[in-house]
Image 1 (cartoon, rainbow, N blue to C red):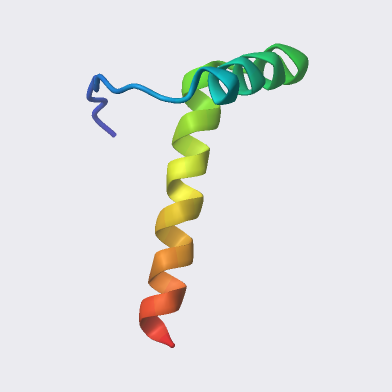
Image 2 (image 1 turned 30 degrees about the vertical axis):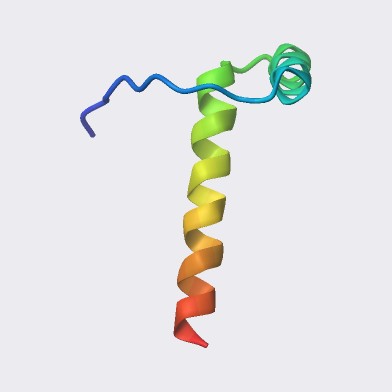
Length: 50
């Protein structure tokens, strides 16, 4: 799958938490953010199907 760079801002506290989690899990911050976005999409699809 092709990748695309995006630029955004997030709450500083949230960023610190995600950075720590990425370190603890030995994954990239980007991987966690992408996973979170996928979860939001899945949740919305479920809502739309109800």
